[in-house]
Image (cartoon, rainbow over all chains, first blue to last red; front, side, top):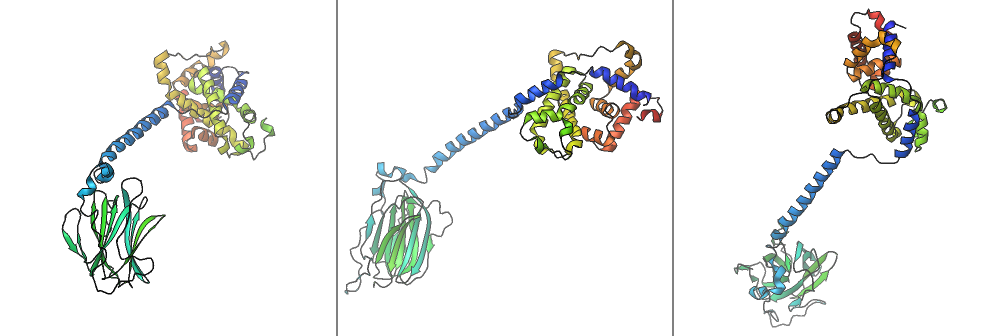
Length: 254
Length: 178
């Protein structure tokens, strides 16, 4: 053994002192006592966690305040029940036309179809439902317009008229669709505000359903006009999961 | 005891029994305590550091895959790391308590031969003292010293050599070998 190493060992011995016989027992005791406890987070982690919590709560409260006022203006119909809005909406209750003017030959509607207006009042439910989709399709014997809602199907009026000219809501301007007659679909308590980029004018050119155009989406009244072949009859049904209002226009009615 | 643990020892052998783990590391506690005292120059802090290191080793013993031969290096590396953390936190306690490290009173006969070495050692960095301690006192191979200190074998060699040189500047090269 070199002299240097010998001296160094002596120095280290002096530094660290004699062996402590009770040491391993103390380590053992502490291990047994604290083995099960979870590692305590450092205080900086506690501070960081508190800061994150404050930030999250702050953001949550801020977004609550920010979204609440802005969610109301596009859907003012939330107060429809308590305010006289419905009377101010001209398209809300168009005079139903008892029978479309046309040939003297009486129209015999196919089974399940009606050539008069159809309406149903909405159940007690949240004032405004969101329209999630509007689409058209054709089947054997009828063409179909489907309006899909996020909640229940609200109250609606479906009226048949002798011309494909409609009044737009709320502008009051008129629009004439393809076809020779019209069907007006008015939903009370719905908005298409979430249908940002969906087309508001469908021109499928089906045998009965020539064109469908959104007439209005204002104060909770959501309406579409259908330009149809003359003398057609409609069948209105609702479907659930998802909620849909289905307007079928018969191709064999007239 | 260590001898009862098979050569292919892994942390999983200890299972979830801290008593078994305590038995496994028991032979390492005295070398660990000495190393920590050498690094920290404070016996009570050294004891605390080893206790804390034992707990940390227990918490991550499931990850250990080194076999029995690597156990000493693994445990001492945790202790060395704990000592570094204690030193990093020490400025606070020094400011607060003006804590004067207690030094063992040197034995009379050893004072003559090693007092200058003692003084030289206190001027070294803790990691340099640890390197010298592991190499000259525990007689560990360079590879294991390197693993414990978390450096490459080459760096460990350089560290040992420089520390020894600073203690004995005029010693012949072969005298520095052990």
